[in-house]
Structure formats: structure tokens, C-alpha cells
Amino acid sequence: MAYAKKSFGQHFLTNQDIILKIIDQLKSIEIENFCEVGPGKGALSYHLLDKIPNYKLIEADKDMVAHLEQHIPKIKDHIYQHDFLKFNLKSLFEGKAFLLFGNYPYNISSQIVIRTLENSNQIPYMIGMFQKEMALRIVSSYGSKDYGPLSILSSLMYDRKILFDVNKENFSPPPNVQSAVILMKRREDRISIEFYTKFQPFVRASFQYRRKTLRNNLKGFVRNTNLLNDPYFTIRPEDVEPTKFVELYTLLMQ
Image (cartoon, rainbow, N blue to C red; front, top):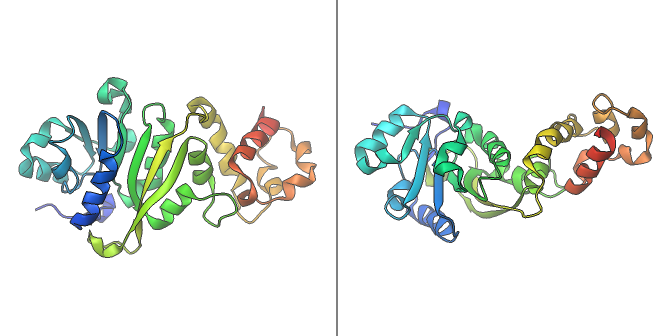
């Protein structure tokens, strides 16, 4: 019998109303290819497998894959037993665009968002279940206590919103935190993946010490430290808009 493993950050969604709510969100998006990460016991897959011809699943837990193949035999042609963070996404759907979704393992959820950003050319939409705290970090605006590097980098590539909250009693085993389902829709005016790759270390350095000023955080990182003498750099990073970070990167690093 398959059971939730702490090492995989597994919390299985059990409430059918919530499951159907997520499925309604997935069905509302016009796209041909779907990829689910962390299907677990198949709460979503059971409803979707016959409705989505171009459907792939990635599950790291070999016991969970065996469980799915035993209880939903037709899933064998759709599932990969693999670590999503190491999976070659370009091998999916012959490199064509796909919607990424799942009740994501909570212990790698931020890394799943980063993987989405790194592959944004292939992922126009992402729908996912996250810890509420992580969901707020993804969707928050500048000035918020939840605002940080993940908020900034996500916002420059995707429009993001929380679709609905999910209480802990809707899972087995129940997590210690509240959860939320979010939607990320790729922006037409997004930064390029090439720019993202160079830019993201700068953003992370800006938040190295959250309560310190940009000047203090960046003085060991930027090339021309004289520019940091400008009074503007006494501002704290949470008070800087995402597009302003792009301007500062161009000023200080190029």
C-alpha cells in the first residue's frame, strides 16, 4: 500500500470538491499539452487521464508510480519515474508548450517555481498547490512582508494570482500549514531566460540581509561601488519595484 513519505514532502489531496475545482481551472485553459508533477495516488490523474490526450506525469517516488500503474493501468504510457528538478523538460511533447500543474511536494515547491522560470519559453501556464506562505511569496507585490526574490523574478515573467485557499484538513496526512492554489500566466513582455540567468543572482544579493539597505547588501557584489553612494541606495530591498531592479542591474552590473 502506498503511503505519504515525509522525505518526498507528500500530502495527498482528499477533498473531491477541491479536486474538481482544480480540474475546472485546468479545463478553462486552452492548451494541448499537460504535465503533472507529483501525482501521488492519482487524485487529479484519475479524472484527467481520459480527457487529456497529451498528458504526461512525473513522479519521483517509485512506490507511488507502482501504485498508480496497479490501480490505473493505462497510466503506464504517460508516467515518468523521475526527479522533476533533473528531468529534461525539452523531451516532453517534442519541445512544444505545455501547462505545468500539480499538488506539488512542499519540500521542493520553490525549486519547482524556479524550474518553471528557467523553462518559461515552454511553460505558458502553471497551476499549483503550495503552502500558503510560499504562495504569498510568489504572488506578493513590493512593500509586502512576503515580497522577495521569488516575487520579483516571477513577476517579471508571469502574471500571478491565488485562485483559492485550501485548509489543512483536506489532505492526508494534513500538513501543519494552510495551502493555496495559484495560477501563473506567462507575460508577453517578460524578460528573457538569458537575462533571467544573469539577473537573478543580483536580485538575491539585494535581499541578502532583508533589513539592511541596498547599499549594504550590494557593496560586495557590484562592480562600481561608487554608484552606491547615491542616497537612493539607503532604501531597503522590499521597497523596490521589480522593474526598478532591472534598471538597477543595468546601471550597476553592465
